Length: 146
Image (spheres, rainbow, N blue to C red):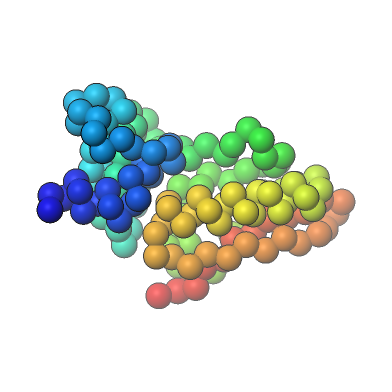
């Protein structure tokens, strides 16, 4: 089995940058085709290679990677998720990642974050906590040290 196949199977054929599916039958020369990103944003990351669309992989070489928060979530001051993922992976602990106006919005954000982090940092157990305070709801992610 090739490195591409091994990495793609582990990552469930999803691009780690945009979180969209990668077509295994697409040409590796096509921007939507599969590629192995052998250098993530953090040199100390536990997973050295990640699956990415060829276009996402190429584009991230020119600009810092930003994991976009989806537009359907109502969050204020969302944290940069690549930075949060790196710190949680290295140090464990807790990171406040967003403020939401309602508990429902915070719950939706927490659900999305747990799902996204399961692919963004595979193997890192992450939990989400919602705390009420000051008329808003804070979403915090926590990870234990390994």
